Picture: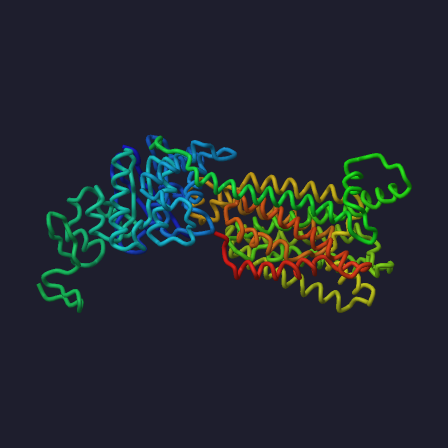
Length: 264
Length: 361
């Protein structure tokens, strides 16, 4: 068990956003946090590395309680990829090098440069090394952000909708890369997602949030039409195409175009 | 997670060397500009003489003694004041732009300069420190410069304090800081105008004169040492925090996920940048433009990486103000133009050119 969350609670202006959140993650696992807009997926993610401070409960990483660790110590254990990546007049190499911040004392060392180079190879983006990030496409920028979180040498990677602004090819590429890295380096990844099909394909486990609580939590068996309808308030059909599970909105008695529900 | 198969990429090292080349070049240029600035003026001093006297060679003739006195008592302090003020204002600007996440960040944006001007006006008009006397160069001298400086400084700190208080109540968000600064800026400008309305001719002239920043206003080496000390400590502090500012430039969330305490870095950075501005403004008056534009000029040349941007801005600020001050003495000699006018005259067209040209590849 690499990450465990117990009774996590988060309040915003005395309003309960998250409560009674509990789950645990093993190394080598990719976990998808699912749920409708505004349910607190991103908030939960930010509570996991204390970008936001939860009001109650505990997060343990490798057996250590996060609240007993300093911010730099947390940053050496947990990497984070935000939804929106800010640009500037920086080369991709420098932008990724920033991810070494938690390890830097006064200045970067040769080792830092080697690690950055290694991650560029891992993501096969050597050709982008000296490109300026303010001239990059969304997909390239997302890769830079992921590379930045990887050079932190984290045990757990948190990704906030890593594919929301990407085209289909880039989505598949990014998610496949994340999955491969997680398996290869025995770390864990937690990502918030909207696309249930991508989640089914690239995640090992699923946490479905509803009303600020965990509605269901588990492997692929928790993704049933009934659970999806309860969480998203929309009937779905789950089928298989070439052996891959797919979720499609609608039901035999529900028309997607008109929203018309026929009597059962 | 560990990565072990990397090598230090050669092309990146070349790229980094180019940045250092710019900075070293700037340093060298600043040095030559300093010697040149000392040599020109009402009395022309040959360059080799300047170097001789600065390197502490013994003076033998009467003429040498005069020249030595001009250099040590007038030219050198003034040139050094230009370097210190330019460096300080520019580095304060670059840090404010980063921590406020706003390209318009500068000692002006936060109303610090205007607060200083109000303080000076208050001192001159209400406390009566502003009777003046004309000199040959038609300049005016404020008869109690120390009190004026003190009051200006107090108002600069007051402005900073108010902004920090507001941002403490509302959380250290950059928007709140910038908007509070703009509001305070207008308030102090209105206050200055209000005081000027009731001032007599001489007081009015003194206030207006004060707002024309002038690096020749340093009275003695002690003032210079105070300014230089504050600016130097601030530069060291900012350079030590270069990775934190880089992280904040990458967005607050990214910065926090990299272990950076964004709120604290923002507040402390603000205090230091404001202090630097306050010291310079209260000793020398309002010198605009340098703090806002110099960082942007440097961005266009060496990019947004704070590792090079902070030293680069420091140097360019010093160079620009030194050139302006030298030009201000030469253009309509024996009269001396206000240096703040020259910085804008020379800097604005250069900056517009850089804007049009875009980034250097």
